[in-house]
Amino acid sequence: MTSTVPEKTLDLQRAARDHLWLHFTRMSAYEGSEVPIIVRGDGCYLEDSGGKRYLDALAGLFSVNIGYGYGEEMGEAAAAQMRELPFYTNWSYAHPRAIELATEIASLTPGDLNRLFFVSGGSEAVESAWKLARQYYAARGEQRSLVAHAPSEPYRDFDAEKAAGNVAERRWKAISRHIAYHGTTMGALSINGIPALRSPFEPLVPEVHHVRNTNRYHRPADETEAEFTEFLLDDLEHTIESAGPDTVCMVIMEPVQNAGGAFTPPEGYWRGVRELCDRYDILLCTDEVITGFGRVGTWFGSERYDIRPDLMTIAKGLSSSYASIGAVVASDRVMEPFMRDTRMYSHGITFGGHPVASAVALKNIEIMKRDQIVEHVAATQDTFKAKLDELLDLPIVGDVRGVGFFYAIELVKDKETKATFDDEECETLLRQFLSPRLFERGLICRADDRGDPVVQISPPLVAGQEEFDRIVSILGDVLAEAWTRVRK
Ligand SMILES: Cc1ncc(COP(=O)(O)O)c(C=O)c1O
Image (tube, rainbow, N blue to C red; front, side):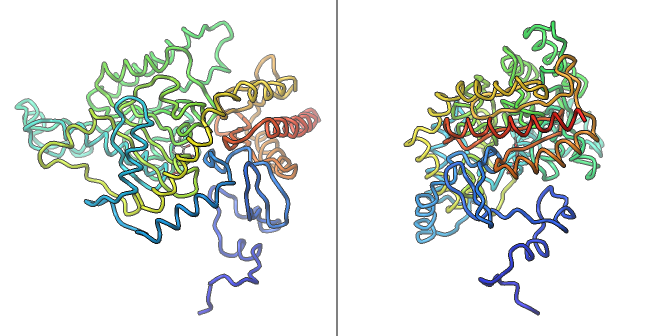
């Protein structure tokens, strides 16, 4: 057997093509062309193996919040932890960094979101939130036997047992929104509202119901914001009612939805969602895997929109992606039944709360506070948005939306009618032209058609005027070129 240990002389291009499987990537595309190999980063910029520089207007995957320039400091924190305690587990044991990190996050999250269950990333966080919500209802039933009632095989005497008060409450359904992305593990994938990602893996985990998202761009022009909010809340209430309210354990939504393009909530939306969850006694989980840690100009989107969730999922920006760590944050109310007698949340992951990842996340938060990263986003978000709004002069740009450092530019065929591009046009315009041309011009952002076609802009939170100008200048050129192609 030949050794696969990389030698200094390894031909990276060839080895990448022979051995590496890229995520969500048509690998055949690299048979005749170069795999992009990124070798270093600094601030908002990346450099490839050929020495070419790129402005990373996507912050990795909406995740390198402090940018790429803190490697020394973060590396020191990781090395110190490696020397002290390279690994120990959160299964039954604690260690100082996980305790400190949990305490630090609890001090930043709004309301009584005080309890941290650590995992390794966003999908695991969503997966864990759903499992926790499922178990919560059983756990809070006092003095009742925990009789399993799998929905697919009803317990024989379930109705009689229930009437006698002997059965713990059992809820399992989740509600999320159309076109929302929540991860790729089977539970998280089932929560996803993106048909193209779901269909290859069906049947999925039962049962998730999807409600309307807050995409306002294609709503009737004369609809008021209040009418739009009412329309969305009616849809949510109707969905809860038809699912059977006492079977629904969780409503999970992002404060600002990423997939589909930075859908912000209309006035009164979150207040209404919270009220419906209260009315039907359903846990509300905000998925803050992207919106957490400064992306929307506050530490959390839940704070910006006063959402008051029962659960929150975090990952990505928690460590600015310098280490793989995520978490479910639970409120005191959700934690309470798990503090009684022999009850426990029956779930665990080896790397949850990994000491090195925790040390890196702690250092990340220290840097964010010290260098006033969230304050910087809050102070410059309007300047950034105003700059991006200049792109509205282009005939192909229908809408520029978002908040903080989290924006989407929707592309249209006709601004008057808001007519969008069909699948074939998306393929030629977005995949074959826009993405490669932006990359060629040294700008990394995402041309996305999971909903209507959008370009997503989400730079590191240390970006400033120079980066705002550069993003708009390159995008302006490339989108103008795209328009001339569309017109041909
Ligand atoms: C809102 C949201 N939730 C969950 C996830 C899944 O996170 P991960 O890729 O770390 O598993 C993502 C990833 O983009 C996300 O945007």
